[in-house]
Image (tube, rainbow, N blue to C red; front, side, top):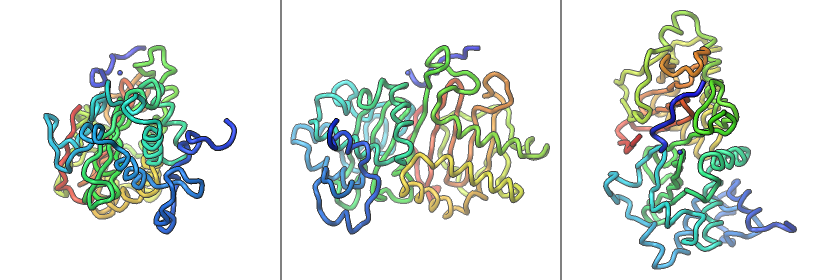
Length: 350
């Protein structure tokens, strides 16, 4: 059975530089970073933050005004640095895409190393698959911007595209994980229509996250299931923080049994698995500051059950300053907003 399209999306020899890019930013100690080696040196792979500084310094006087902005820069989308959407370009997609001729080859490879350095190396192939399925591959539709001054007190690198918003801020954005709200998604190949999905989302690189959450739902007793399963999901981009006095839908994690709580922790680990260690640690620190997973609730939505198979495609894990909204109908959209302070404002647009 086909489902409606998603209106929100609109849709060798030796070690080469490109081989290096694929493994760049796996991780270095602070001492290694301080050694001042070349960006593409053989000794070690730099961290994304160091590469953002190298990229910034390499930009010409003609390039810089088009992709570099002040920390508080606003346009018709509001504070541009904190904006997030499911399919957007932070700068001109036609003229400034990262695979086009606006950047030099060296700059392109630095950008690619920054981008993949933000992910767990074990996820690189899956991220490439998502980009191929949804955007024709890495570099085709992605754009970047840099805010503030890399190497200074505050800076942030942002990459955007279809089913993509990812950030690198060197922890200079106060209170937030990932440098601010992020977005990921996948309209996987493998269903009869590449834009729509079958109930089990064949070939989707993120669907296992929903399977993990639904496995927790299966562990709940009748009363808990009644709390957890709600009729209709909120709008997918409603991921602003409610704070400690908020009304969080679903079953409270605090009320789960010990084995159920253990599985809830496993769900959380599955959600943060794609990212680099420092960002995963930051998520956990933010969550702990607001009382941990026990302050969150988990909800599933009857309105989003593709194929009516009892596996809920849309679900939400939410606490005072933690929102992870997974929408799986007609394909996967995931909105993430995590901070240690619920006063942080969100600039989201579906």
